[in-house]
Amino acid sequence: MNRRIASIASNTFREAVRDRVLYNLIAFALLMSGAAILVGQISIDIERLVVINLGLTAVSLFGIVIAIFIGIGLVSKEIEKRTLYTVLSRPVRRWEFIVGKFFGLAGTLVVNTFFMAIGVFAALLYVSHRFQRSDGWLLVALYFIVLEFLIITALALLFSSFSSPLLSAVFAFSLFVIGSFAEDLRGFAGLTHGITRWLATGAAYLVPNFSALNVISSVAHDQPVSGQLIAYNSAYALVYAAMALSGAVLIFERRDLK
Amino acid sequence: MWAGSRVPALFTFVIPPAAQTGPACFAFAYNPLKHPINLHRIMPAIEILGLEKTYSVGFWRKKPKRALRPLHLAVEPGEIFGFLGPNGAGKTTTLKLLMGLVHPTAGTARILGMELDDPRMKAQIGFLPEQPYFYDYLTARELLDYYGQLSGVSARERSRRIQDVLGRVGLPDVGGVQLRKFSKGMLQRVGIAQAILHDPKVVFLDEPMSGLDPMGRREVRDLMLQLKAEGKTVFFSTHILSDAEALCDRVAIIHLGELRSVGAVADLTATVHSKVEIVWDGTRVPSAIENMGGECHVVGQTVRAVLPDDKQDVAIDALRREHLRLVSVVPVRASLEDYFVQKLRPAETPAEVRA
Image 1 (cartoon, each protein chain N blue to C red):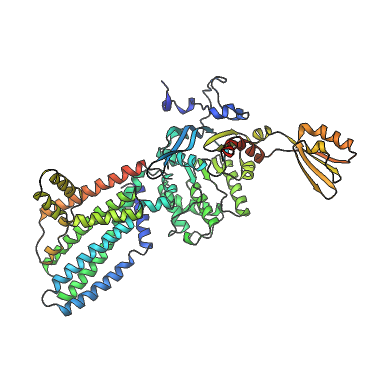
Image 2: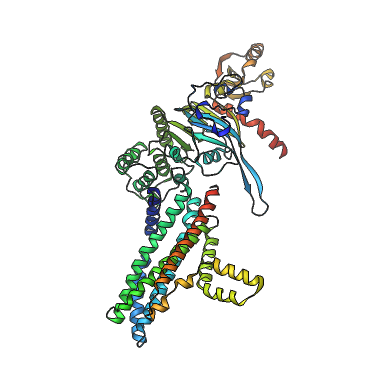
């Protein structure tokens, strides 16, 4: 990574931290501990299952919300407040700015996920009293959640490069919801015929496949995740995020900063 | 062989069509038909070659809005160049085009002989936008450090220069304060600090005096003169004519996106019709003087009239005929403001008529 991208990424991270985004972590960790104690009292034998499901889903949703709400303002806010003028009048190329912003927010989300994962593991330890070997799969589920964040961050940046923050949020959140049902959409496409099949298949493969990245239920039931899926999901997320980011760069390169 | 943008900068010339027709263009215009190409001519610091910008406005049926007509301009190294015009004249659009913030509809420009998207050029220029706003979660020192990193200044050099520029803009003790606590004037000073932090060769300032108190304005004027003394080129836009008059080696006047004239302040103001101030005792204005089209003010027992200088003798004769005692006759020096008003007036007349 070149120095300018690193500087922009580090400044984006600093902005997120000082914007008190990371303070939700403390609240989250406390909530998780509270939920774990509550679940321990009302459920028999499935405390572990509930804590993993509840904990990882919360990590995913919190992160997605943060990714969307910070991501949609990454470019538009800089244009609106004209802070971009003094950046782009320096030897910074527009693509470097977009990529730096992406890495800055991605870094923020990784740190967020790290702290939230500590909350999940603490709650798990509280209900199970000890860690099991199969708890290691939680790390894979967390890795997939981070991959989700990379995709949604890139999409938020893409929308942010040409649209208003509100519309960008609507687009990004809609894609997240549709993408969570991508497998169902692909199944539906298989049942249709003619032009509907073409359209449904196109839409199914265009939206990000978040359902393939969601292995929370499997790991909660101690089911292992195949190495093939890990490799496939990693490649898929990186290619998808890179394509969305390229789209953001292409649009931003042509944009006039009025 | 050297067609278009491929012509080496050293051999290029600028022919501003609008400026060629003006009376005061000799200080600027370079007409290759009258003057042979000077192979030893110094490369301009800023060379604008027909930059033009038309925006599309409207949501559904977009209409073209011409923000800048083809602009030809050259700024020599080491000069303070004022870019003058009323609000909405196209000053900020020109600066944004030069900074690469908006893309030109046509034309091009070179700064220090390099294209506008050349990072090597951008490392050698500084820019203060109009009414600057900075990351308010950063302290002044952090902001300057960030900009220093983006401009490629080494870490050791940055810490030295940050303290130096904060001192130069009159903010030596607030480096550790978050920018959200800064007043408008302090933000303007930080804006100037970030523009000169990396020791640029060319500094672009968009309305640098905006938001500053009289002392602040004076300090910025001194700073601009210091930059000139250091050999830097300063290109600044303003609609405060007294600043331009006090500072600029040359000025350009732009109105409704069109260059109206360019030249040294003294040369431009010399073209304004000279006036003369005549003062006499009494409270009466002879009808001959009233009809001359000047301004007459009666103050106590004296009358002060400002008239075109070619009416001076006729006016004095009129005073003699009326047995009024002449007190003084003083030529009035034309100011840049007089020239500015004169230059803007012709284009506004049709608009008023239409209205």
